[in-house]
Image (tube, rainbow, N blue to C red; front, side, top):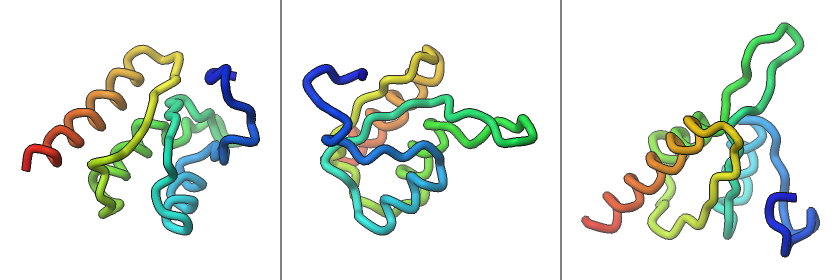
Length: 98
C-alpha cells in the first residue's frame, strides 16, 4: 500500500472516473483524496478517463469549495502526477487569494 500507516479499512476505494464522481455527489468531499492517474482500459482497449480527468471535474464541474481539499498524488506516471498536482495546487491557491 502507498500509505504505510493506513490500511484498506481507512479508505473508500474508487477505481473509475464514474465511480469517483458518483461517490462525491452522494457523499460530498472526503477528508482526503489520493489520486492515481492511469485507470486502465475498457473491454475494447479504449483508455478510460484518468485521474487528471477526475481532478479537472473537481475544479471545473463539481461546484464544490476546494479551498481545504486535502490530497496527494500517488500515480507512477510522472507527467500525469505533475498535471494533477499543478491543477489542484494552482486552483486552491487561486481560491485562497480571493
